[in-house]
Image: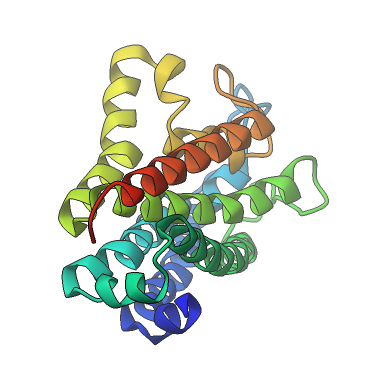
Length: 243
């Protein structure tokens, strides 16, 4: 039932299409403007981080779609029919998260690899080109795709907690963009490194470690904890509320 609803919504296909187009486009533009590193920066230069820069936009598109998966039914009143068919709210949320998570994981990996290969084509020949066989590169591309699915699930969870589209999108945008930027300016990476966007930029979508930030698998584990905690809170609140 959740799959039928998800694939029948125009917003699903528009958001997915926008991510498929926008992420490779940003990767191409970023790589086309990437210049060879100086001798001092050659050791830390990581072209993979540049080619996957489009993740910053892709996460917004997928995250907002995750919010709409839940709040769209509340705003239209369709949630009443859904709960009449599936009274167990935890089961309902698990079904929504499972279907949407699998879809966004598949799309995320597709877009991450498409972005990687498209971006490489635009790279200046004088700039070291990333290769999937290089240290940490394949892992970085795979985790970038998985990250999009994680943000999508966070969107589902925030939507379940707030049940209001504007409030949920505002909360998600604040957590992804505003708070990390503010905290980064105030404390450097000491606190900001634990926020999803900073984890993606400095821990997941990189092939070389970034000083002062989480390691790739530690960052991924932190994201998993965020998703589980957020979905748990969403399920707990749904049980205690009327539709």
